[in-house]
Length: 125
View (cartoon, rainbow, N blue to C red):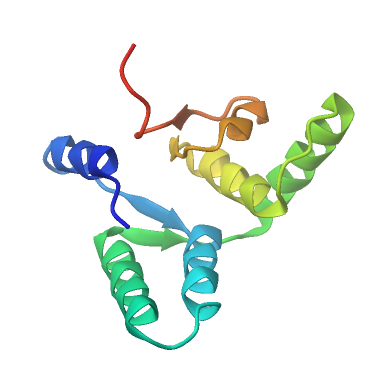
């Protein structure tokens, strides 16, 4: 489903802006599609997935630098007593290595030191 605030934010981005998708987020979207029984809903989710991937300028892979950052983040979160999902650690590591901001509704992304996070569904203060 398309969140109106997210769509408004995307439409308001300056000309020439690019949206990138971590390969981990791509996989998460596909899992959502593949775990639903065949039917209209699955077909619609597949369409939304394909639109999301087409909107992204590129999919950002995992490489050795990302793996090293992933390990450092995992250790930091464990030491801080603030564990988060493995996939979110990967997404944070990719964003930090690529020097990018993560758009997420997950407040726990803020546990990753140095990660810039924007919640495009939050109401302005």
